[in-house]
Structures are given as structure tokens and as C-alpha cells.
Length: 205
Ligand code: URA
Image 1 (tube, rainbow, N blue to C red):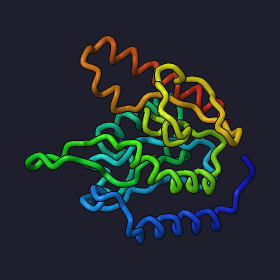
Image 2: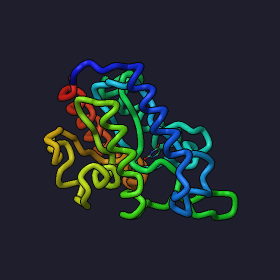
Image 3: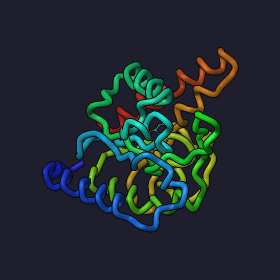
Image 4: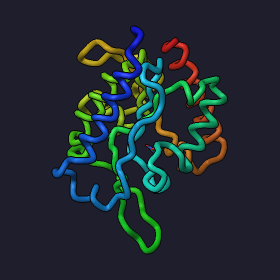
């Protein structure tokens, strides 16, 4: 993309964060979270990855993709030759939605209403960071970017264009890989994920 004013973008991202922190119309469940989790990475990054929502560890750390899915994601990025430090990583939904079950907090998928609530924040975040390519990880991010439900498996690994003409690249969510029970299938799907990441990165260059 075009070179961007890093100081202005950093200030705009901070303002966006303050904006969410001071909202008084958050979904009820969001009040049970520890904190909102925002994106991280350099504004103007060529590639922006969008996940679903912070998980248990992200909620506590205040950083995206630092838990089990994040560790798998980091490993896959490395194998794909993509530097996480040079990418911008965020989520479609900025708070952790969970069901309390004893001392464990069980992840709950965000619904269509949750996705729409955070959509303006995500749109603004994309506009400020201005990546050459957005990569959606899983169904929630794809829905947040397109505004409609779409099967990830039908479109993964291909470049789609938004209503604004900007390209985005859908692939699967790393949590999906963690849940595959069969080892051979899991290994195959992991390789496909790495191929998608490498292909997205070469598109963004
Ligand atoms: N899963 C996500 O979608 N995002 C995170 O930040 C962590 C796990």
C-alpha cells in the first residue's frame, strides 16, 4: 500500500482503543472479561491477520494470539517464512466471550450480533493500519469482513474482493487445527495452512 504516517496511525489506533474502553453499550457478556484485547503490530504492515476473539490467555495478557492457538499460529508463520513482528495481528471481536465452568472458562463463539457490534471498530482498525492484504482466520473473521456468513472451506486460499474493491484472503482458524483428532488429517491440514500463509504473504509483498 501507500506509505502511511506512522505517528498519526498510532494516535488513531490509541483513540480507537479509548473509544472502545469508554463505551457504555457493550454486550452484557463483555463485562465479564478482564479487558479488551486490541491488535498489535506496526501500522502500515503489509499483511493483517484477523482472528475470532481473545481466548482465556489473551484475556489475561491483553494481547492477541498468545495462548495455544497463538503458539500454533506463530509456528506456522515461522514455517511459512512470515515474520509476526512485521505483521499486524488482531481479532474481529475484542472481548473474551466464555461460559464459567468451575475454575475453567469455556470459550463461547460470538454470534452475528456480537460480530456486528465490533464491526465498526474492525473496519476502522483496517482503515488505519492500511495493510496491502487482510487475511481472515476462520468463519467469524470472514463474516466480520464480508458482512455475511460464508463457508471458509469453499473460499480458503483464494483472493476475494470486498465491496470496496480491496483484496482479502480467507483461511482456516488455528484453533480448528488444534481440534482435529486424527493425526494424519491434522498434519495435512497444518501443511495446507502453512501454504495459505505463504501464499498470502507473497500476495502482500
Ligand atoms: N483465537 C483468536 O481468534 N484470537 C486470539 O487472539 C486467540 C485465539
